[in-house]
Amino acid sequence: MIFDPELATQAYMATLSGAARARSDAYFEGGYWLILWSALAAIVANLIILRTGMAAAISRWARRTSRLRWLRSFLFAVPYLMLATLITLPLDIWSRFVREHDYGLSNQDFGAWASEAALDIVISTILLSLLFIGIHAAIRRAPRSWWAIGTGLTAAGLTVMIMLAPLFIEPLFNKYTPLPASPVRDAVLAMARANGVPATNVYLVDASRQSKRISANVAGLGGTTRIALNDNLMRQPADEVRAVLGHEIGHYVLNHVVKLIVTLTVILAIGFFIASRVLPALLARFGARWGVTEVADPAILPVLLLVATVLGLLLTPLMNTLVRTNEIEADLYGLNAARAPDAFARTAIKLSQYRKIEPSPLEEAIFFDHPSGHTRVLTAMRWKAEHLGQPDVR
Ligand SMILES: [Zn+2]
Image (cartoon, rainbow, N blue to C red; front, side, top):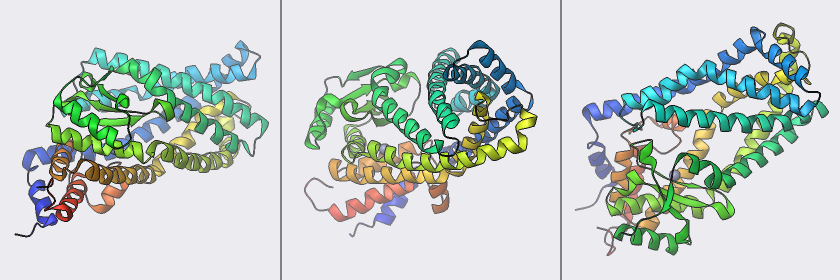
């Protein structure tokens, strides 16, 4: 009998049906709206802060408190970002806590979730405020060409953060340990070594503290690069763990982190350039009403973030497609490395419990940062069709 990849894919698709499929579709499609609601919430929060004069008030306080311009930028940014976070907090609690529980995806009670969310907010507020010191200084000195310096600073900050996150940020939220001794561990580390990934760079992460999802990731840069397999994944059959690790090794070997930073830098440059042209126009049109009339005023930060939010929303399909392209490459690398197309397909079905399994091609292009279950299973079945008959592929 001839093996037909399309028919084999349809057989896999049929394993997620009825209520289970309706549920994963609803969860994922709700996410489309969340992209819009989150952007609208950020826009409304910034407009409230500007229109009510709160931005101007915080700015007056920052300018009274210090004569140092760089410190004024920082002193404005911290309370402003806290305030903006507070305004959008109800939506964040609903989308990141209530909704995850409604769909049975979270293992955290509210206290544990809230303390992690608070830590997350503190870290991102400090980092963003530090970045604003540099960007605001560039804006004051070079009102037309600051976008280039802003791009450089942001890209450099991003690179340093990606490099240091496995050492200083991720351990604040989860425990990373070497894989415990088991036959799975031996198979996994052998595959890593065979693909040029040092065994010391493969870790186990206790992601079940937060979530029921199976996953793995590559993080870090240069010397800090590491692959982490989560404990939910490690409870799956050995061939599925190998299939996922093959995918992660693909990210590692194909240098996806570095490539993404380079691509992001180009996008940042375009975004900052647009912002540098829109900012003066917005200040000229609305500045008097907001109490923010000149770029030396640190209260331009909410105006900048308004622009960033709109650009971010418009760029969502492009960003998703850039990330998804890397994911497809990693899938193909993983199939070649693990040579377990059915294990990969079974994992794709498990992942489809919270990712719509058969979207339309346009829907996948716009909203998916990973290939859909259908795309992944079809890719695996095509691979299988071309390798059937080889001794290790059944
Ligand atoms: Zn991936």
